[in-house]
Image 1 (cartoon, one colour):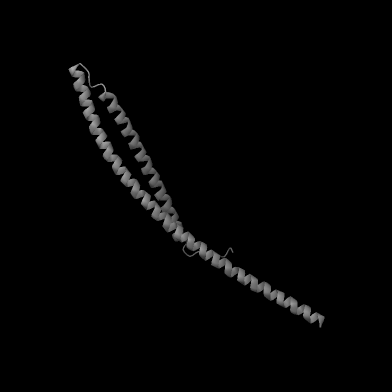
Image 2: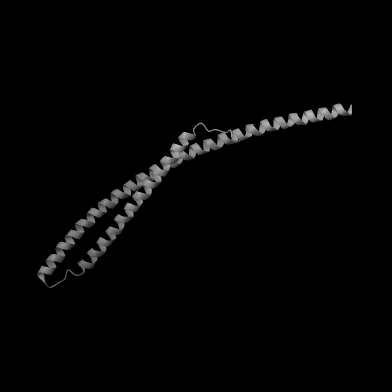
Length: 146
């Protein structure tokens, strides 16, 4: 069986490398999305914390808190937009990964089928050789008996 050669092995190797690159890209984007989600959560917690303190009697402190809340609100909007972009990138990366996995699987299936066919042909050759040896042995024994 060691003489089996898959003619598309180089293509399969390239597909495997592409799939690995795509997996790395997908996980990197997923981590970036998770980081943005954590930052957004922290910003929302800060907003909620300081929104409760807006009822301050001091006008200067109220104005500072109001400006801070306004800045937090703008930052939250920016992070929401960034999160949406990351989610879109994640979907694209997921689709790319799935396509590359499908391409690799199809080549692997083709290789598997070719190997089964090769193995079957080798077994048939071996069986033919064994049948021939058996026939010679039978004829030799038959000739000895006569």
